[in-house]
Length: 441
Image 1: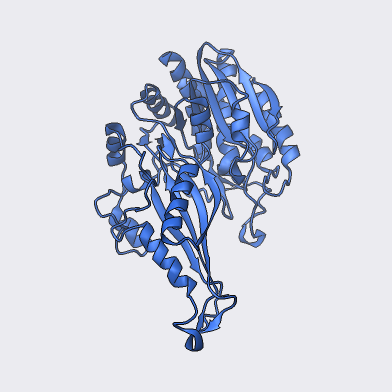
Image 2: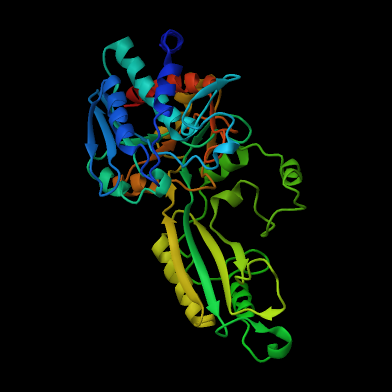
């Protein structure tokens, strides 16, 4: 069957179908092209043999396609919205005029995420054409708001029924270029800390030692939030985080990395404390990060006592944490140590985690290897954040990420691209997963 699937892929102009999809703008942040893209997305679902409908969310609609099959109920998640193109002069060719160069298609949405969910849809279409049906019961959910944080995804998810598991394809393969299966990702809470002094900047010679300096108040607060050896010292920040399981630790230890080479490439002499964590383990635990510090001086660095100081920060979250719980812990800490500092929470996303010990894991790994022709790495947690918690938490089921884009896809950047070899192999892998899950049942 794998060889038949490869022959099916080779015998069709699937690159042209990808180009048609990429040529339709669908920028959720501005609304550009969203209505037309939703209509095209419904046509793609129907072309793959699915009954398709729009699901109203209160924002941009989600697109849902369904089909029956004898195997377990598999929900395939993707998103049809894309990032704004950014500065057009930085693109080699226009972002919504797909161009193929050196085996890659360039255009906004090629890797993130239209090319990847199209590979999943084409895998279903291939199975329908070759076997006359689907081996599993399938629901495809295409989010229209992923690039703006998926604020209404949970509402759409509640309307699709509870699947046995979720498959999603987003982001690049492992940094080594190897295929991978991703079991989770960290959540995020972004926030600002703001503190004020006098009602205007003041001459530091005339007012130094008299006027309160908000910058000192801010850095002294930050120093109470994390120790010099890298431990977050905010009570309640990570109290309910469970230790990594044996399976998670084993998978992290198996991930390849050249620590010295990686640090050299970024011009760093060493890793951030604490010293006793491995490279990949650091991307699977909670962190508290200061993104920027400012006294709103417009870059002119005058000799003044500033009137305001701002720290923009983030917390990356893991299973056992929620944005609300972490925000409340930080709020209590500030009230104790610096009650005059204003805490302003911003964007947030919950973490998601599926344990390697989950029964479907071995089946997914074998199917990806069959389809891609390469043994995939098992990644317990991506360092970044995706809205998968809206699936894993609301549906209470395991979620598996199978990225189908090249490492250098340049998602969110100019000249975003998708290696067409990955696209074609991804179609076979998507179908292989459905076949393997039917056997698993």
